[in-house]
Image 1: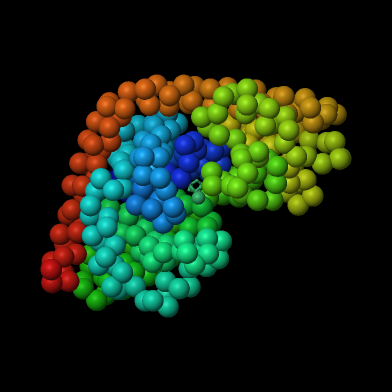
Image 2: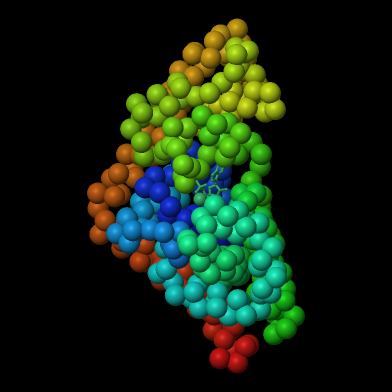
Length: 330
Ligand code: ADP
Ligand code: NA
């Protein structure tokens, strides 16, 4: 029997990924690639919805792909590719945009948030139709499961609606995907502002742990993380968001349970706890960083791997696109 298909991706929006991307996405992708036929893309077409320097965008795309591999996504097992290398994404997005309601797209809360933040000069039509491109990404591969963060849930629901509408209008064409929403314990917050999600596009990076940062720098950021005045290492999201966030990171990266970590640091101060966490962070990220830098040292080989995987993706994508063109009369 064929393995169920899984699709996920990330925008190449920074030089380095952050610990939230690692715990909330990459670690889970790494596990899931064993039991699923997984497609992981670096969604560079999506990145065009925010202003970018062309040379920097190309470099961020390569760096993001290198970090996928360094974090354990195996390009021989999973289809790890760059979105723009497969032209079917943009082509299917156009067709899907003609079966998406203008009002329906207008209800996407991420567009409302982002367009408010960017202002009318930066807000493009592409930002508005972003969820339609995302629907194309997913539907091209006849995807069963889409692991996403909370913030993308509405987009996957739109994807399902578009798929169902297309299927009922033109006959069975797309598999209707199911979102896998990230667990609360996989959500990481900013170390300086522990009620805000850690993000690679945060305005200040003082509270962001970068995968590719110098380990000493990451250790320092951990030591400076915001805590509270209570002094006990205890998980309590509501009243102790800083310490709780550090506990979640500690547990995820060490593979231990939160109560065991609380016990280990019972009666000891935050300084000890942070030192312990800094060690865990350095141990986990050190090898990932080295591997990523090695891959980036040989761009020709990395490009070869990505080109090979794009061909694999294209075979699947073009089959769906051909069917779609047939059905709609192109
Ligand atoms: P960012 O905010 O860093 O730009 P994206 O929105 O591009 O991240 O998300 C890429 C992936 O990483 C998604 O699967 C998302 O759920 C996950 N992710 C991003 N930030 C976090 C976080 N702080 N905690 C857990 N997962 C996260
Ligand atoms: Na982002």
